[in-house]
Image (cartoon, rainbow, N blue to C red; front, side, top):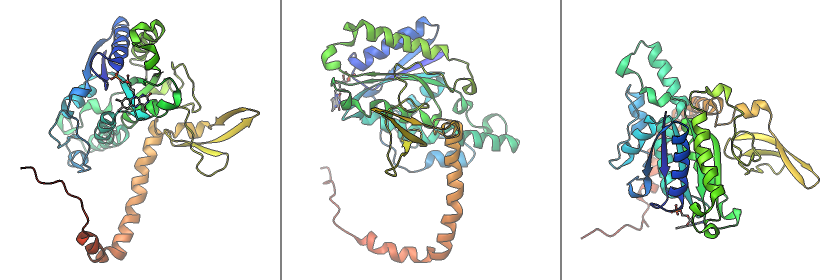
Amino acid sequence: MKVLGLNFGRAMKNSELVLKAALMGAEKAGADVQFIRMMGLDIQHCTGCGSCSRGVANGGNSVCCLKDDYAFVENAMLDADAWIVAAPVYVLGPTGQLKNLADRFGPAHDQVGMDIEQKKRIAAGKTGDQLLDPRYLKQRYGGLISIGGAFTPHWVSMGLAGMNLLMFPHQVRVVDQIDAFAMGTRVNPVLDDKLIARCEQLGANIVSMHGKPFSETARTWFGDDAGICPVCHNRDITIRYGTTRVECPLCGIEGTLVVEGEKVRVEFSEEQQSHSRLRYEGLHDHQKEFEIMRPIQQKIIAERGAELPGLLQKYKDYGHELKMPKKA
Ligand SMILES: Cc1cc2nc3c(=O)[nH]c(=O)nc-3n(C[C@H](O)[C@H](O)[C@H](O)COP(=O)(O)O)c2cc1C
């Protein structure tokens, strides 16, 4: 079993040390491990050009057209059976580089979209290289370690939730996570025996999942905090309607807020839980959303499409853009 570690922090600093502890735990549990120091790599932001989707639509694989270090990381992520990610909190959430990677990797490898496409190709009699890269469809488990300097948890409030953005579109099932804040008072993670042991345990926990089908592990959770949402185990809740009908912002599922004295919990029905976007059904709902949108778009284009060039003209002619001076 191959476990890939991704370190979004500085070399030999907090994130890397906790990641290495987790990888040592994974190695001890029998895994082959490798890690990548992301900070030294050039991962540009997604430009929304759509070449990855076009590659798949045209019968090939998902290939990003940007020429940077992404393809190297993408290949390692696809090769691995499990991922362990450690990232520092910068301004309440994970570093921008992690989001850049999430934007580039996630939608381009949406596992439900890939599953649908692969089934279409198989039904059409395609074989071998005419099929999608089989690594796109591997079931992977993952672990997350968020690192923060402050000792007040509200200074790392979007750390773990933000790190999940790298995991769910590709259906990497997170079964353990550690919110390692307060690095400022721990001085160095290796001085905190409990934290290091917990990170080693995370590594072993991820290895223990290898080969288990997702259908059998919906309830598996090794994290110290069960959280509010029973699917993603995070604690954030969206009060969208100003009523007790609330949402998990990560899973996109609805629940009912229940207040009992000073205690608050949210009840999510089994049906709602199964439609979390962290699960196949929830991501599939999004694919259906595209299907629903298509005829709506077509109707508007048929009715008003001819007006578009005229309406767009004044936006095209609009000035006021502050441009970068040309380099000498
Ligand atoms: C630009 C920047 C923003 C940061 N913002 C936060 C923050 O919002 N909350 C927090 O707890 N720590 C914050 N930190 C502290 C880092 O999370 C902390 O130093 C961490 O150990 C860095 O990870 P590394 O040691 O693996 O490089 C910030 C650090 C930097 C450089």
